[in-house]
Amino acid sequence: MRNILIFLLILVFSQCSTNQGGEDQDTGKLNHSPERNPVDVIVLKETDFSKELVSNGKLIALRKSILRFRISEELEYLAYKNGDKVYKGQVIARLFRFNQEQELEKAEFQIQKAEVEYKDVIVLMGYNSGNKQPPENIVKSAKIRSGLLDAMNSLETAKFNYNSTILKAPFTGVIANLKHKVHDVVSPGEEFCTLIDESAFEVEFSVLETELKEIELRKEVKIIPFINDEIVYGKVCEINPVVEENGMIRVKAVIKNTGMLMEGMNVEVLLETRVPDRLVVPKSAVVLRQNQEVLFVYKNGQAFWTYVQTEFENSNSYTVQAHPDKGGTLAPGDTVIISGNLNLAHESEVIIK
Image (cartoon, rainbow, N blue to C red; front, side, top):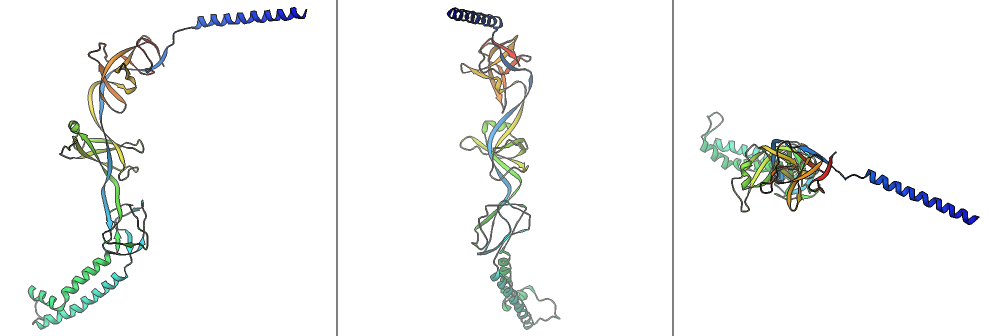
């Protein structure tokens, strides 16, 4: 009896599994439909195209000065460090100046002494305070004989050396390339620091001689630093009238600092030229098939590929036209697929997202 019950249970479960499998198969047959690829589209129209000339350049401050001391002494005072802003006329650093102060006092005393001698010489030459001014040749001779001329030269030198112990900012800017510290001995003519006016920069870049026709003075340029995507606008200020050996021409543009730019920074330079009446598509619309440029035109739920030629390009778009040797057409009003086209074939079934 127990064996009969087990047999009946196995028979029931086997029948249920068979029914379920049949229902799944029937349902699958009923729900089967061709796969449609989801795509994005645009409608073609003629419009102006921003053709871009792309180059790389480097920023150079319009005003930059390497500051030096003219004498050798120990550094006594330093007011700033690299990156600090300093205003015109402010003292950046000062040397130990005891010797220069002594020389200045000595020169001033020699002037006083020589002036007394000068007056005595004038009197001996037959002139006194009651007479009119002596002739120029007499004055010069008296200055030489009294030592006043030498004393005046010594005073000027002493003043120059005294003032040379102080380094002041010739214009407003930021400190760079400062390597000295207090108590260092500074040599005359040695580079002490660099003062950079960061309010405006020149960017120097090169273009091909064939591209020169698209550049003119005061033409607007876009400057994009490599460190971020900030766009800064400037204008062409200089075109060097020489074609270099590699066929390049050097061009400069001037830009104002927005706060992110630095001396020596590498940037991308874009110059735009408007080209009228072109069919423009995003770069994503053009794909390669058999090493040929192709885009897909949407018609009634299907994608039809069309061989094209790209004429101009910028950072995100192409201008296109139907390839004259491959048949096919392309005209304003056509619906072009711009995404989901990487794996499409001719006459693929598609659906617009």
